[in-house]
Length: 77
Image (cartoon, rainbow, N blue to C red; front, side, top):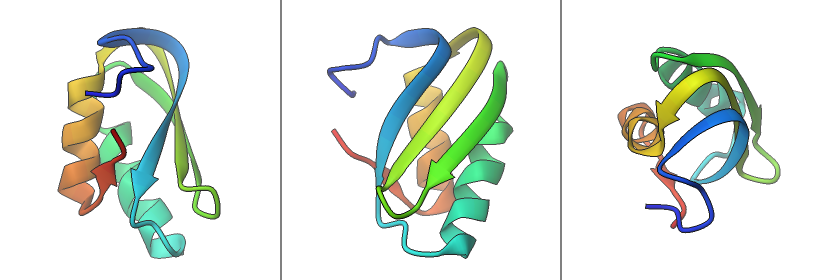
């Protein structure tokens, strides 16, 4: 689990994702995280390796980690 992020969050939270290098990575990560219940928007910055997730209801960061894994990438610890 990410130590700097609460287990669940509401609002905007930024995660670091390892392995993203191109627009395909951006699309894959965006699609998987967008499918998580409660997620309103996803902004991927490939150059910095960050993903900002905005939620209007509680989202478990483990669900975000699972979505990133499904896309073929890994959340940084």
